[in-house]
Image 1 (tube, helix red, strand yellow):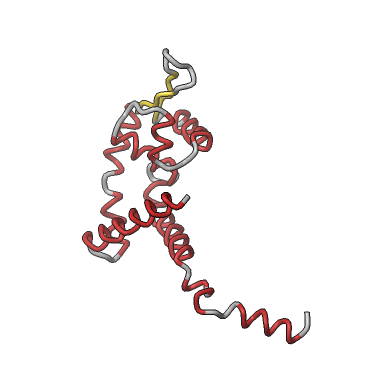
Image 2 (cartoon, rainbow, N blue to C red):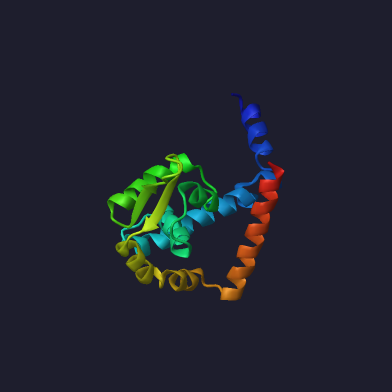
Amino acid sequence: MTVDDHSATAGAGSCEYMLLQNQLCFALHSTSLMMTKVYKPHLQALNLTYPQYLAMLVLWEKDGLTVGEVSTRLLTDPGSLTPLLKRLEVEGMISRVRSHEDQRVVHLHLTQLGKDLHQQAKHIPQCILAASGLSLEKLQDIQKNLLLLRRNLQDSI
């Protein structure tokens, strides 16, 4: 690469719309990473990873869902969810029960430990609110806009 080639490459990368700091995708990605880091100590105290916490949130909302239903709620593939669910079962937080009507369908049920964990996790949303430095109303506005963005992106694929 010559000096001229290097200058042309550097100049091409300096377009305002191509700067990393101007990318919505990076703002979302880096914010997600920070959010996970804020959650980490709270979840470690409960012996949960962030993805496990999300699955437990779904089950705390409605116990007895199928793997497919949880997967749909979490916008993930059921196959990628299975190892996470197996770990929750090994940890004694859920039980996985195959349907008598269709052996391919697996229902997820909270154990007593899983139900008790719900009580222990109730402080987490308040901790996240405090860490955000924003008002509840402002966070609700951000969430509303993110959900709209997600819906629009889903509709585009």
